Image: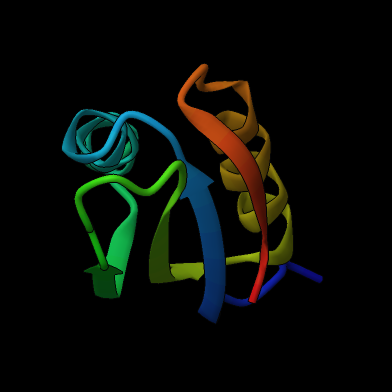
Length: 81
């Protein structure tokens, strides 16, 4: 039985402001993830920026996405939302 894709939500907290956000966006783009939404709330002077996304993935693809995000130096944490 193959796993089916569904919309799964994730939140990554990144450092580096917009530069950290762009690193997350590049992983998503380069790996071809299909996104339903992608939202960022960047504010000057904060240590971490939340990046929220909803991707169309299987459970295994979702675990791989989290692992990829967590390997980025700018990512402090990444978890299912």
